[in-house]
Length: 167
View 1 (tube, helix red, strand yellow):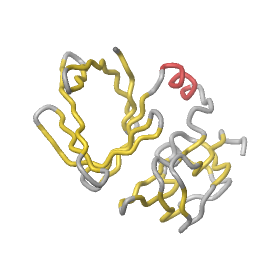
View 2 (cartoon, one colour):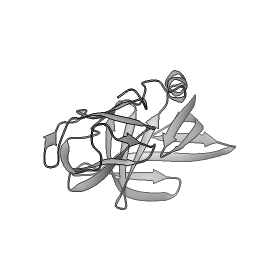
View 3 (cartoon, one colour):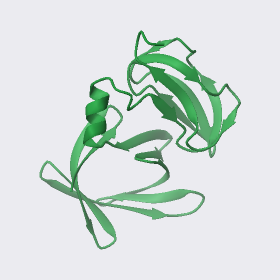
View 4 (tube, rainbow, N blue to C red):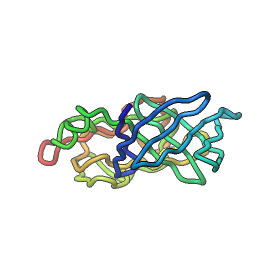
């Protein structure tokens, strides 16, 4: 089955198949086996081909957040209709929600600020790890739901964006 995934700013079109105890990603004529095995304390062992590494994984809908070697990565499944709406400046990326429960460590923007795609909006902490929340597209900060030090639950609305000129 063919899928599109967004990792950082890059979108990747891949085919995904499933075998006994393993997924296989097919891209540009190459196939790689991928497994994820639960360990302890919310950690997991991610194996890609012959390489394995310990990670922390959190999910929210079609978003998967992977903490690896001190860095946080967001992987998002992109439905073709959502990709079309986002490219047309639609509301697909207007609500930025918490990938996991946590607290706000730093707020880098204020309501009314114009932001660009990839710009840091805030930094959150969860499970003793900091995650930078970045703007998914250009826009204007319409609402900030939390201030530094405040806690929130998973899927809480953190930031609301508006199209430039509409806030």
